[in-house]
Image 1 (tube, rainbow, N blue to C red):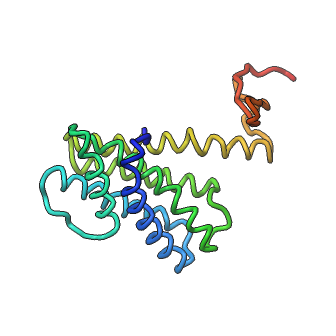
Image 2: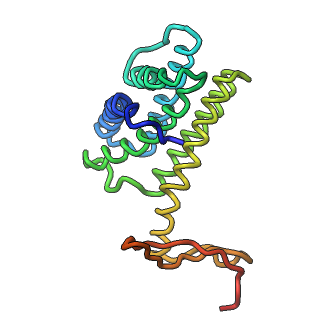
Image 3: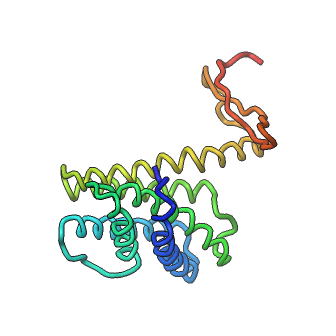
Length: 208
């Protein structure tokens, strides 16, 4: 989970913002769309490899915004004095990065919206492929397992916290598409302490 202590966030936020700005600017200048997933994967791998280098005492293969972010992640986690303490900070950094890049793309006028399904799907693809690549590259080591697990977890949280709400908005706008399965969910309007929204209820399919 990316809920790291507030005091650990500022230095990571600065490094995330720098990397997100670099990615967005490069993409916006080329007016690219799908290729942003490749930019993600390059950044993801560089962050992960830099963390692996820090943990194993090896010199980083490159120096740039991804490596700066990796350094901020590991430095912020030192206070835990716990093996693998940086895993939560990495989760937080990736979670912020995949939100910041689309926001910057929209502010630059390169994208009309900060979230569409294709943005979500390509982001998930980059996270999943990075996870597989890191696990294959580092074998059965605790660092490799931890890195792979974080990228998978970020993907799962992105689905639960962002895409699920996006899907609900699209159902309300265009109608549902799960109409043949024997069991399904239905959106129901809900209000609690002034907050209005929708919740899902689980139902068996009926003729009505």
